[in-house]
Length: 141
Image 1 (cartoon, rainbow, N blue to C red):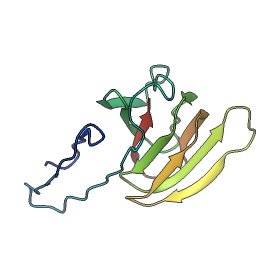
Image 2: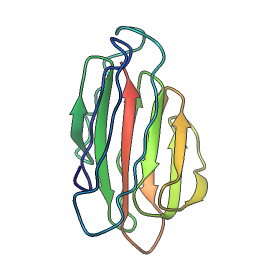
Image 3: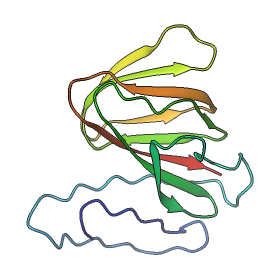
């Protein structure tokens, strides 16, 4: 498996064993999570079409994933999550988020490999740091 690749395996449909082999010369860190609920349609459409900050990297019946790259001070703009989401940080930095209707931003300092579980809602994310910020976000459908 090459660095930066994203995979989805439907373990809820059948039991299986997964083996990952590092085919490169650098450390290959793996981030995994399990979706225990079977089937689709428990949440909403999982759509980020209203903002250009999100680049789709995974489109499966039960989950969608996007890569977000933010320059210092750059915003995602408002976007809506209709289901539970997981945000996994590929680089660290100062994360500023605001839920729709809120006046103030909340702030977190994230490190590479950190993750957040997110509830549904409408949000804006800003890179409040001085360096680049990259993360992947996965939303249940």
